[in-house]
Image 1 (cartoon, rainbow, N blue to C red):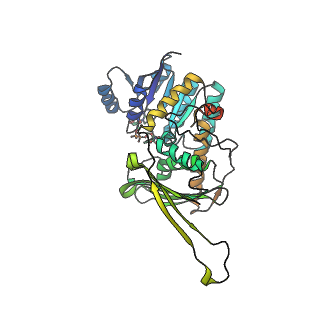
Image 2 (image 1 turned 180 degrees about the vertical axis):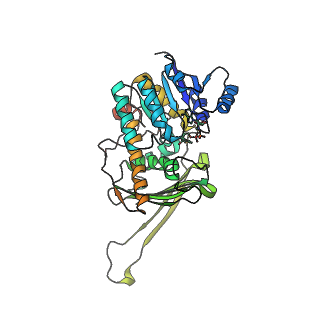
Image 3 (image 1 turned 30 degrees about the horizontal axis):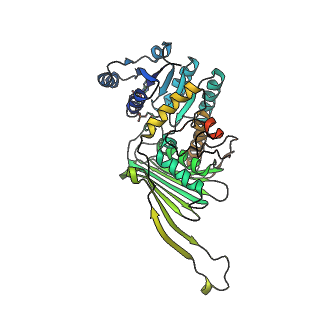
Length: 372
Ligand SMILES: NC(=O)c1ccc[n+]([C@@H]2O[C@H](COP(=O)([O-])OP(=O)(O)OC[C@H]3O[C@@H](n4cnc5c(N)ncnc54)[C@H](O)[C@@H]3O)[C@@H](O)[C@H]2O)c1
């Protein structure tokens, strides 16, 4: 197959990052950009005069020369735009979260499978060197069994009009947490408040309960003076702090733990044993995760391999978000989920993610898929 032609729909805040990365991807050219907003198209034409710019999406879909469509419009448009593209025979990559409901995601997965097309979701962090390295450290046993994970993704804005902050920011943390624990949650709780836009929560606290008493908490906020992108992973033998704003020093591994004596006779005998050891900062290859993600989409179309973050992964993540909304409506009551019969993707620590099939075959080392 020669070079693939890509169309990008939605050129607001995020779309231009996708356009830049697809333009630089191997075996790929960006042929057409689509946005309802003429000003955005004018801006993109100034940057890339050789690329077509259209406001009419049917023009993009009618172009037989366009092989794949990348959807970077607001979430409520993901489903109609992706459905139309899959119906027109185009491979599709959709930004996170995949769509506005489980029903919409299911329909897209079915349509892609029926038409033999690649459907991928932009769970960008699974393509980041930091997340892959944390997965590698956990699988090496260095920090023991995971006890819990706490994630905080806070900033002032960017306020969204069609989704709450959990749907906007938590997909990143959920995708990372599922990947690190290798499991889907059994229950979801979520509490939050809409302080600025009525009905759209701008601060949420979600918790996900997993097997073996493991749990994860995710705090998401558009109402915070500082930008925070932090995750603490607490294991039985050590802990990791992942600060995504620290680039080269994004991960610090701590040799700290606390043990409880197995048994004691009196309260006077009782003593926790605290262990304080060294901490270290693993080396991380500096590569834009979005670059790896975009190349992965192109590679999967060319090879026919299933993307690491395929439509089914997008669907399972939206199932968790939908449960979080249900829990929000009942003031944080737990919502039970049936664990799906598909594995959580575990990506390799290597420079580029190949495909889920390659991961299973072991051609990308050290790779494994942990079944649910
Ligand atoms: N992976 C990431 O890290 C990441 C980061 C930011 C945003 N996103 C995702 O990217 C998507 C877009 O977010 P954004 O912040 O760029 O939004 P945005 O509002 O800044 O931009 C959306 C653009 O889509 C255009 N648009 C809307 N409806 C359209 C339609 N029917 N046809 C064509 N164009 C249309 C708008 O005119 C606008 O220019 C969202 O799904 C968001 O969650 C992902």
